[in-house]
Image (cartoon, rainbow, N blue to C red):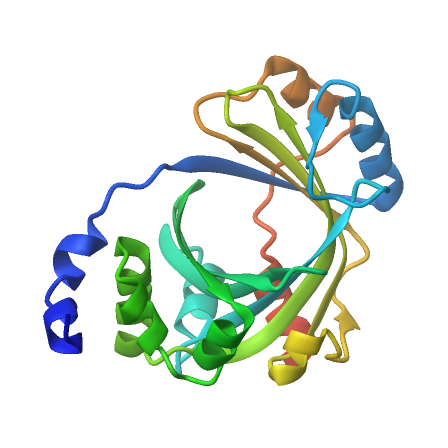
Length: 242
């Protein structure tokens, strides 16, 4: 199939069905976050990809438009917004190119899995591999990259503990040691100089349909209130001194 033929599919593929998930975020000091984490780890299952300490490093390159559209929409509190990122987990040769689209606290993702050489091509502005994959998500992502002139901007990295609860689509993540650096190819060798963004732990509660009562009670008992912390915008502010 030619590029021009594939391009004709963008409008209909944009409406391809996706699952939607609610997200609630909390910021906690590390000590309080550890208390919460230890309370839930006997109830919820840890992520199977974690190391012996139950943790793994998440590294993400965030792309941005020439006018910093995604950053501005988040800062303005716009109900509908998105982020485009290239994500990798320490020790893995596979990368995920993701568009995370949100309406309020409801999120969905368009995800394309890439090998290291494919991810390097995308980082360098060569997007043909997304057309070659010819999936709804890869074609939609290609359209977004081209139409909005996205380019790599910053690298955000952090340690994550993740826990799951049964088959109800309920998940909690604890993200700490959040750091930021400029986007460059050293990302692929994990050698980008990174600077601290916050000393807080960001707790994200993610669910499909409901949050168990015990988790809302636990957060309330610990004195935590839901917020809207964004690792991308906080990293942007740190890197550019805003």
